[in-house]
Image (tube, rainbow over all chains, first blue to last red; front, side):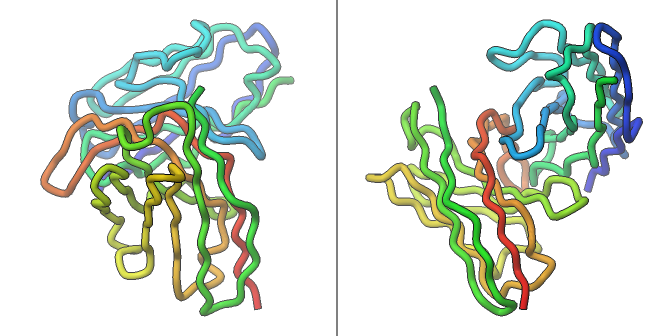
Length: 109
Length: 126
């Protein structure tokens, strides 16, 4: 089973700054099948990125994904206060779907 | 607008069963598989299983295979998840999610999840 390691565990930045979140897989993810989700307390998780770099419907262009193989990155180019959340990556290049990473918590100072 | 609406919080005793419902709206119900995932306190998201509302096919993570049942009521656009023989380790928030199928391998379908329910808290405590 693929293990996903997300780093850092917590990221504390100011509004307008750039956030770079990492997701590293224990082995290569087939076809770049990696998704990113945003999860705020008490809310449903929200799909941000699929196929490593494709923004989901309605996602602002300040969110971007990149990477292939074992190393993937979610970038938030200009942080907004509403971006405070936990961000998870998920592989779907092999079945069963998941696992998910343990998440990166983004805090806005 | 795609929506998945889940039933309310549950408190159960060890050994009991729980049923959580997920009602879909805003899209043709039978065109996407419904998946169930959970998140225990302090843990990451864990995938549990899927069902095809069109034909009732199901598939489960190995650890849940003998404890989870997924039942579809097409007329209500609803999928129920029943988990039996509860222990304290089953305390978690349970989510239904619409699966976008990206392919199959020898072990089953490969999904990412484009719409999620709001989550149902299940507490197992004596």
